[in-house]
Length: 374
Ligand SMILES: *Cc1c(COP(=O)(O)O)cnc(C)c1O
Image 1 (cartoon, rainbow, N blue to C red):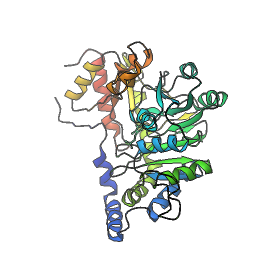
Image 2 (image 1 turned 180 degrees about the vertical axis):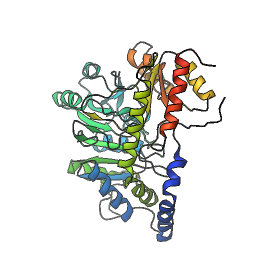
Image 3 (image 1 turned 45 degrees about the vertical axis):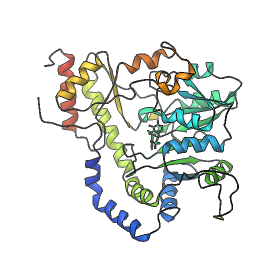
Image 4 (image 1 turned 60 degrees about the vertical axis):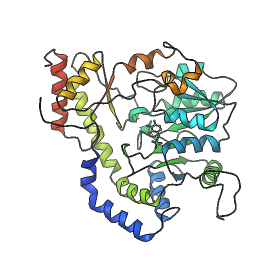
């Protein structure tokens, strides 16, 4: 037993590096007494949209709201079907459920992203949209997915909650589909100090509709409501803090990638462990570093005993969650997702993780795999 403690995500280390700047910004917002719909949200979003190579964007309350807002503004509702991956955080499917449309699940490929052949099989006359999730920060196969969408006149929505700054064949994620949805939940690659999210798009009409709905159906005149909407606004405080962090995002992303490559190097010939692979032409941003191991439970227990935290993303595919039991799926419907769910293991991953820590983690994995686990 060692006293080393390595968290899955250590937000304290990030905070320590930028505490003075964050605290000064927070104080400035408090003293301004201007807490919503101000300059800070628009200024942050201007830069956020630009680094993702889109034309328009709206700062929002959460990533879940971003997904709901996109579907709402696209007039997707009861009677429609929307296709989503079965292995994702539940929010992707919840966005669809909130819209009133039916969730249709699709299995994943060896990169943990939407299986394009299964996608093609799931299309019906009621299908209106497809939500591609860039899971773990690995871009989904956007060109093939877009071809399927174009052939069937389906809207492509990108769930970029885990993939800020990721790229697919030279294009920033979020700007390939009609709309990109982001989350700034604290643990995401760009995280608020609370809840926040965003949508980006190159479609002016869609942007205007989303802008209207996210603030009670209002455009310019505060008390002229074009339609019943919702309140999905981002707070000024979160925008100010996110803006401080946005300046570091590229650097943090590079560090995540270096950490992933060091893991790959140290684990690549360890029998019993499979490292994540990068699809050709993608730039992965490693929100999570997920390995596969047949003895997942025993490996996790071994690492935890050595002071190394691990995670499961996700322990149960969505078709086997009580929340979606009404869809009537059974074990065997999504073979890849079911097989992976019992083998995946998320290792510590954050920019400030040190090479020494990664070496220590990999040594312990080797010890376990060579049967020397104690
Ligand atoms: C985090 C996450 C969301 C939801 O974001 P919130 O800001 O927590 O509402 C949606 N989709 C995926 C894939 C996520 O990881």
